[in-house]
Structure formats: C-alpha cells, structure tokens
Length: 135
Ligand code: SF4
Ligand code: SF4
Picture 1 (cartoon, helix red, strand yellow):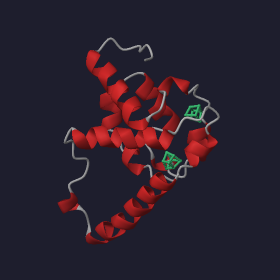
Picture 2: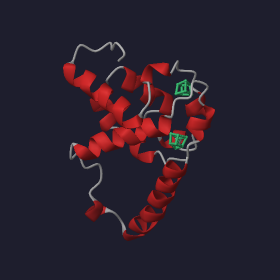
Picture 3: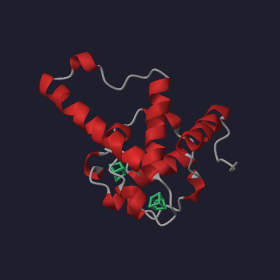
C-alpha cells in the first residue's frame, strides 16, 4: 500500500480501487510522458494518458470520472508498450471506466446517439476487448 497526498478517505478508496482493478502500482509512474507522446487519441483527449496516471496518483476522482479522455481511449495498448516502468496504462484507464460504470454514472445516453454513430461502436468495443484479453 502506497502513501497518498490527499487526506480525503474517499479519494484513498478510489486510488486503492483503481490499483486493485488494474493490478498496477500507480506510483511506479515517474511522469516521463512517453505514453502520451505515442497515444493516437491524445489530440482528442482533455486529459493526456500520463496526466490520467498523475491524477490517479493524487486521487482526483471527480476530475477523472468526468473526463472525456477515459472514454476516448481505444485500448490500442501503445502506451503499455512504451512505458519504461512497465505501467499498464490501458488497464488503469479501463479500471477508471469500470469505477464510473459501477457507480452508475452514465457518460452517454445511448438513445441520443446518431444511428451511424451507433453502427460504429460495436466493432470498436469488440476490437478493444480482444486486444485486452489477448495482451
Ligand atoms: S491504450 Fe488508450 S491511452 Fe493507451 S495509447 Fe491507446 S488510446 Fe492511448
Ligand atoms: S510512460 Fe509510464 S512512466 Fe512514463 S508517464 Fe506514462 S505511465 Fe508514467
């Protein structure tokens, strides 16, 4: 168990949950930025992958769970392959999505999506899932 900066017990629980779900030690990250530099979705993210790890280290739950970035990650695993510390960033981001979903915070109202958008979602989800389970 690592020491955290925040004194908010809810924040500590969030950090512990992210580490448990992802199987990663968040404090292994030393903020080199290589994950963000190689991320194909970085230009569209409001928080870069390296920043997501930093926010998670600090227990900034609300900022992370309200971000667009955790949903824009396509689980391509480029960040994982670039990290010199062996941090599996994609799994950390997946853990954030799981925490968000399990707390019943709907990011999208599927009923409001355009039909052509809906048609593109299942393949993306399928490919992302396959990459995670075969990595
Ligand atoms: S897995 Fe997600 S965060 Fe990592 S490089 Fe791919 S899109 Fe970016
Ligand atoms: S590549 Fe690894 S060590 Fe570097 S910022 Fe990303 S998670 Fe941290």
